[in-house]
Image 1: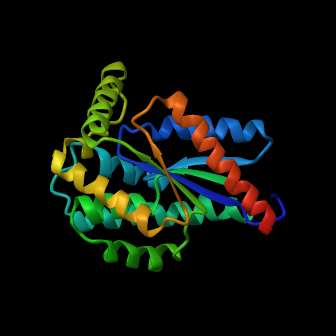
Image 2 (image 1 turned 30 degrees about the vertical axis):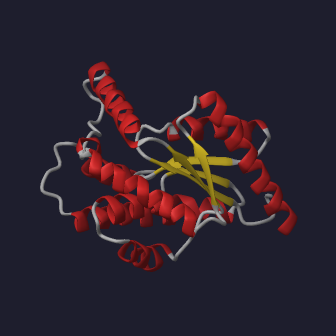
Length: 226
């Protein structure tokens, strides 16, 4: 693995579907296998990206146009690729990323109704059209996922007055999240060669081994073609 390009794996899904938990567990399993893993997230991942994340997710951010929102997402992503993701891949590492361009296509393209072509065009220009080797889609019921995300964010704010307020998207309507969910499923159908869709309505203990098995299979395929 160290002698070839690294492996880029992303985890996608609605807020509150359990992405962060599964990414953390997956990283632990791969590190226990003596693999060199970088775990990161979007928006964020770099100092600049974290500042942009604060603007994008803070519920105090008002009046932001959908196009400006998408531009900020890509500004964070372009820096993330340049500073962190591409150097790690060039060094043969496994990169696990919580969200990537599929999130922008689902949330801004679908949820904000900007369409897929605008997202994909920006991805080609600003991100060199880099694609994950494997994308795990945590498929969940929109209402339940968003309710969980809202509870999580309220709990964080109550436990730590200095905790960032990241409720801006969770304040959107059910119709918004239905569009995001449908967009994710459409992307998974279009990009079936790189997507693994897992039913995230079940317990994390059931979901985790399925994700690990899918990732290990992809790593075997990569090793055979190296």
